[in-house]
Length: 158
Image (cartoon, one colour):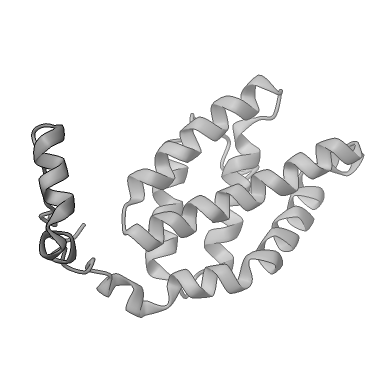
């Protein structure tokens, strides 16, 4: 991540009120360092979101036949989960912090496990997105880090 940004801080309420009255202090916050966004990976991911969800869903149906037998509610949850993966990947790209993505993946696997969805399906989805985003090295790196936090899965199935 970039260098730390200094912002005005007050130790108590009266000092905070003084800071709020000083417009110069409020305007003195330097702009965020977003140089990492110059690679367009975030924008590319956002623009391809629908296509990526559709292709991941098609691959899940091919690799895991039980996916084809999902109820409409289950299918909706699967599509949502595939979208959440991309949303958190996009957030991690935007702020340039892979821990945002890896912590989400760990949480998602825990939730899905409680629903009886095996971690191998998340691994397969992350691998799929990695293949589809092969021209986005930061995204691929985040996806690989996400796969690394998964419990041991049979990679042959993914």
